[in-house]
Every structure is written in structure tokens, then in C-alpha cells.
Image (cartoon, rainbow, N blue to C red; front, side, top):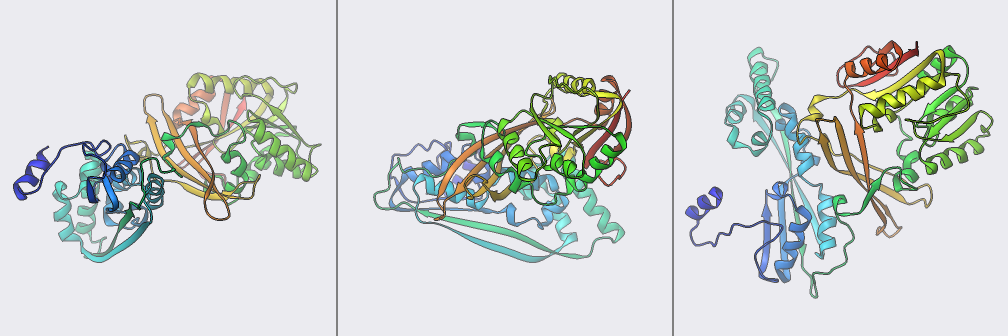
Length: 463
């Protein structure tokens, strides 16, 4: 309300109204022009706000939205020195394509986007004086006191010791999106897209979801977090001897490679659709004799074989267990199926506290891949990440879409993935409590020592 009072003092001839942008207090077709200037990221009901803008515009009216674009501003100095600001902005500022899709769904047509890249030289000593006045930038006001103080101290230190130059190149991208209300525009215009939180959603692996159908395409590249993992598990298999049990076998990415190397593998997974893909691939590769697939829950499975030499849980599959009780139950099940002295190998991520700050989500993730069933392009976008810091869980909501040859949306799903993070010493104690003796811990599959914020690769023996 105070901002409205200040505005009224500056321009008393304008009618100033306090209201929720998602429920505008104006009749239909009240305005010829509606605009939103550097404010969209503050709104809670973003999709509703855009639909309201369409409603209150008259036929032929235009809506203009202008804002900064963090997706195109990764080299902005504010983000370099105050990285928490980037994490928050990537959460709060919708990507332009998402904004355009919602506007089109609301009825705006055409919807156009224009990018403006501001490039300039920044005098760092002058900039230091600016950032010391925290109220000069909303990004500085949105971050925690600790993150703000750390950024200022870093800039002061670099200027004092000469490690920072006197001037730095800086870059900020602004975006302007325009949409018109066409003749015959109406409130019930067909919606081609809506935010994932407004769609019915289900778990990632609940049936033949778009995630399941595009999993192999999405994971075909060389991702740093799992680089070298197949060779790592193969070395362990040869050292342990005997059959290998893979927990969370999925579509067989690891198991098939081990089987090709001559190792007998049993793969366990709860998703019948993932197992069906793995079985199809095993048959095509003529590996069915060395790869046995079983459906089961890692917390309470019971297989005929109880003397596996090695149990592996690749690519963070253990982290879908959301409580310590579930984690301990799974470890007990692994141990029941390992022979005495057998090896357990677990892969988790090591929590990076920057990504666990209240409201911080890290960079918005997106991927483009292929639906194995139809051959259509699949787009996956992480839209929401919700944290429960007491229980150490993260709930991600993704929007998956496939596209027909003409570019229209052929299929759309909102899919949910929940995981639990475990700290290093918490995991060590859990393993020991479950009857395992920790033999080694690495931060990657190349054998690097433990390191903060990277990976947790555990090797433990059934003691």
C-alpha cells in the first residue's frame, strides 16, 4: 500500500487501485491496453493473472509484459557475486516460451517476443557503492542476509587484493512479450498449455508416462554425475565375483553393459513399463541368458537368490526413499540378498547447501528428447521444486509435452518426482547401523576423494 501512496503523490491524476493481479476488480473488456512492467515474477497466481489481463481487455486490445530474463542473463554480475539471486530468479521468472504458451492458451494471438541485450562496462568500485545500498536492486532484497553479506565481502576483498580488474564487462537481457485480443476473443478460448501445478499429475514412473517413454533418449548423453559409472560397477563385479543385483534397473542402462561384459545380472525395479523396455533391449541384444528381470519394491523384495556378490544402486535411485525408515528397510533387504563379505555400491548426490536455501531451486532444468513409442519430440521442463527441510525432501513437478509434425501439442503430462537428500555422515552411520562396513567413499566414479556438493559414491561390505 505504501508504494501506491508514493505513486499517488507523484501522479495524483491517475486512479490507483490496490488489488490482487489474479482477481482484477474490473468488468470484462474495460481497457484497450494492459501492461505489466517488471512485476510478473512477484505474482503467486501467474497463469490466473494472464487470464485476467485477457478478460479485462476489449476486442483489439493489447497486453504488454516487460521484464528481465534470467535464462539469458547468466553472465550478469549480480548473479556472479550473489548466486542465490539467480536461483530465486530462475524460479520466479517464467521462461519466455512458457509465458507465451500461457498467453496463447488464454486467447491472445498473435503473441510475440522481443529480446534486448544490454551490454556495458561496469566500474567495480562504483558498483560496490551501489550494491552496498541494498534497496537499489530487488534481487539484493530477495536473498538471505548471509548471501548478501558474502557477495559484498567477496567484491570488497577482490578489489582490495587486486584480483578483480577495475572494470568488468556486464550483460543483462530484457524481454518484452506482446499479445493481442483478437476479434471474437472470448474467455473460454481453448487452452493449449497450463502450468504443471494446474494439471492433474502423477509420479514419474506411474505407467507408461512420457518420462518412461523418453528415458533412454534423455539419458543417452555423457552426464558428468555418472561419468564412468559402468566401468566402476564392472570393476567391482569382477572383484566381488558371482552374480550382480542391480536395484532400480530401469530400462537396463547399466545392467545391459554388465551383461555384455559377461556378468550375470538380476535387475529389480518397481515399474513394469521400465522393465518391459529393458526386456525388449535385452532380447534385441541377445542377453536374456545373462540378464534376469524382477519386479519388486527395494524396501521389501524377496528373491530366490540370496548370495549375490555385489548389489548396486546406480544413479541416485536410493534417494526416492523418503524416510529413514524406508532407507533402513531397503538396506536390510540388500543385506539379506548379499553373501557374507559381499559388496554394496550406492550412488547419491552430496547436498549443496546453496540449493537447499528456502525458496532456492537451482537453475531451471529442461530437456528435449524423443518418445520411443511415437518418435515425436518430447520437451521436459522443471516448473516447481518444493522443499521440506525438516524431512530433507524435495518434490519436483515437471511438465512433459510431445509435439506433432505441425508443431502443435500432441500430448501433455504433469509428472512428480520426490527425493530425499542424505548428508555424508548421516549416510555413513545409516550403513553401519544396517550392518555394513564402509570400505570406500568417492565423489565421482573416477575415484576422487569425498568433496562437498558433488556425488556420494559408497562402497561397503556385508559384515
